[in-house]
Amino acid sequence: MIPAAQVLRSIATLCLLVLPHAVAAAALVPGTPYYFGNFDPVQRPWEPGQDLNIEEVFKNYQYYEIVLDRDGKEITVNHYIQNRKAGSEKYLVLPDRSLRKK
Image (cartoon, rainbow, N blue to C red):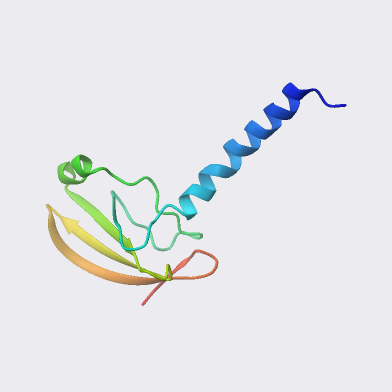
């Protein structure tokens, strides 16, 4: 029989390895704007990274606002420089979580 401490340690290790990836994939709520310091659409699978809070957004020279559509199949990426919109692009979110410019 396996000691309880060993089982708990195995479960904790598994959670530490799996949860960050599950959270990142499901982190964006449709219709809610999220802010990031960078955006790399070529990354496969695409992961949004660590989002910025509102104070971090306004102190950055440039940032990206990302909004997932209601269906979860498309994102809108707005690029800001000195708090002014510099551009906007739409990407389809493919089944393998990569992005394709629309």
